[in-house]
Image (cartoon, rainbow over all chains, first blue to last red; front, side, top):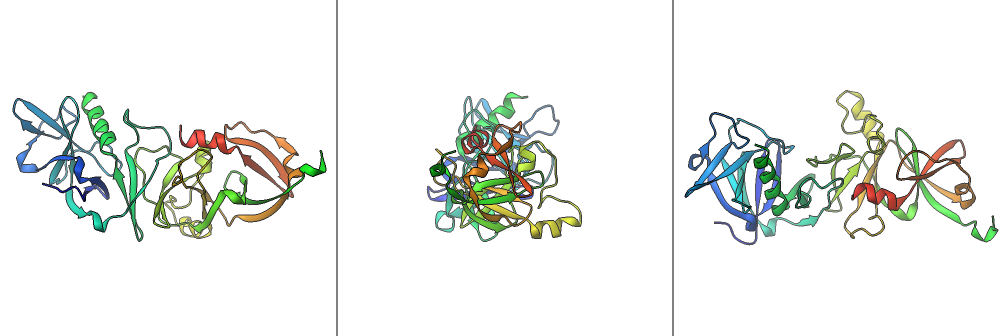
Length: 148
Length: 161
């Protein structure tokens, strides 16, 4: 369970991103997910939830679909008709007191129907971590499911 | 032209690999050395990354790529020339464009140190060409060089469609 005042650091390939922890519906370890072993779907794994199953997508540092690799966890976000998941190499909780997020408006055409994927960033010395806009990220993942 | 309209303008000439921009100095917050940029996924090609500036994230653009010229951009060169080019290149940090939010600074990669100039507005009346670009208002002869003067409202429409 994550608190209100935290961010999740999400490692995707060679990059890391932040997600407000309040956006996380669930974080599941790989062993608790049904992994897609046969292909044929954009989803890399599913979380079984009753009669439904929530797809989870594995992305690289450029947010392009990626397969394989030694991933550890997936974070699920609220979406319709069901939650969607982002698979990460690793997910780590950061306290808000550690993180100072400044607003950011990405340039160019909005990539999802819910807006830009990033709404801020944390600049810490030479490191800059982009902060996902949860609603747009969920829309982006749902778009992947729709492409199946 | 009425002499009352001929006001000196403090400007900055920002050289890029395809043209030099002439912008009012008041538009520029700071000129900084080229630094490491974080990638901004799913951005247009002309967004070369995001820099940390005064603890703020500032997206940085390549004017060459925005104009559709596929020139090399400092910081993205794969070969040995990258180091020397990167050392000489700068990032010009602009204040937010008209009508934009107060945190929306942005940077443009400059291939060399921008030059401060005081320009007589008569120069700006001597347009020599209007290029085929949505955000270049006009070009003008400035000494031996030709400079492009951006239409900042049009540039805002390109950056924030």
